[in-house]
Length: 212
Image (cartoon, rainbow, N blue to C red; front, top):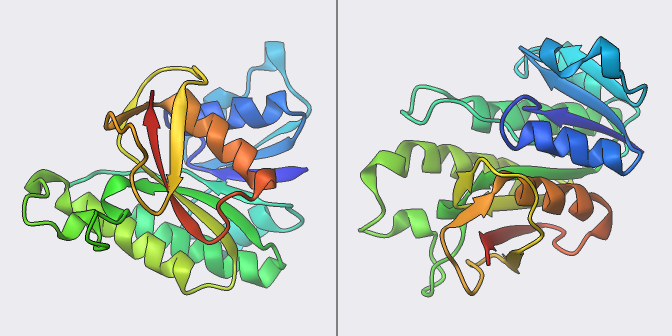
């Protein structure tokens, strides 16, 4: 299985790369600063490192062509000046359609889940102001996926802990899971995303996730 990973150098992305390699998948690690992922002393012939820009149509098209599925864990600043999460996923979606690739598992934020009233959490009056800008980025990314014909899954994480896979986490469709501790290990997000590529438990759904 061939899987391009966009945002491969972040705390979740690098663990997605490793998790996919551990499953024997061929991984295309895409990003602007991906060189350090390639260790000549411990080279993995299943890992292809692609230095590219997620807004570049040709580079993204080349990365997704021939792939079986795509994983996107795009990041960026959270102050409202960075549109990587939304416009980056928009370009990935466009190029996947050109290449005939249908499956994508992407990372977003918890604010895009529904609250008990069925509204987006980000719309609540008490939603933290400092997270609204990045929350809107996640919302726009979700809307681009929702409007596409792709077989998408949008993982809406709470605070991400820089920790490896523990296996102790819970998920839920469209709403926060129970229990919800508002935290999850980066390694557990990676584990879930790589497994979901083939499990298809949450096709065209948002996913709430939390540590146990």
